[in-house]
Image 1 (cartoon, one colour):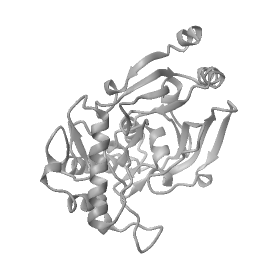
Image 2 (tube, helix red, strand yellow):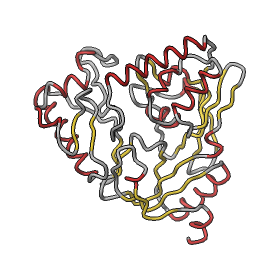
Image 3 (spheres, helix red, strand yellow):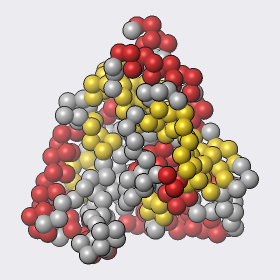
Length: 304
């Protein structure tokens, strides 16, 4: 195995707290950065042969590795997967492109309706995985098709947006498939209007969400409406449920709810990740006790 470790520059005993937006996380047994499809194919020939599990990560803004660690390989895509190519009516974006970078690209090319990505601290691949969105936008509404890699057959496949069963905060999450790129609708607009919209959304984010803090974004999804299975009720906003269920003690300490927004938490750097998970479980229990509603986390927690 040593040859492969050297070939793919696989790091061992990788401390995820050093790259996590939360500055918290356990040890991953292996870590690897892959830059093109050829490397990716060869890597999975090796992983499959040795039965090594993997987890694809993007900007590590919405994933927490528990203190028990991850007994597998964390895979990060870069290189060719960071390209952006503008076509006639679409734009092809690599899965590792940062949301903010893509939003700025769209501004420079006068492409509208991606201003909201300026406020999301993730990658395009992560957005497709989660069907990320905010301020009334969701990425699913702009997808023409996606390109994926099957880690078992080692083949590349394409799917149209209509073939993917998107729902609220759930995108393309097929097991043993990795998102390589996405082709998005490129609608032209006024650069001045795009810039104004980006500025307005960023200001709104500054006013309502914590900044310059160890923070992963929204903790919990907004619950489904009890009246319509496919709808969402503003009265059931996660932050309202949390705010009405917890006491002041949840707003202080080494991990605490943000006073700006009760569906965000802030934590001290290098805190035990299990303390973060325990904090979230406590919130879930309080909301269940008060409202008989089970909250579902947006934060992805990995480990046993």
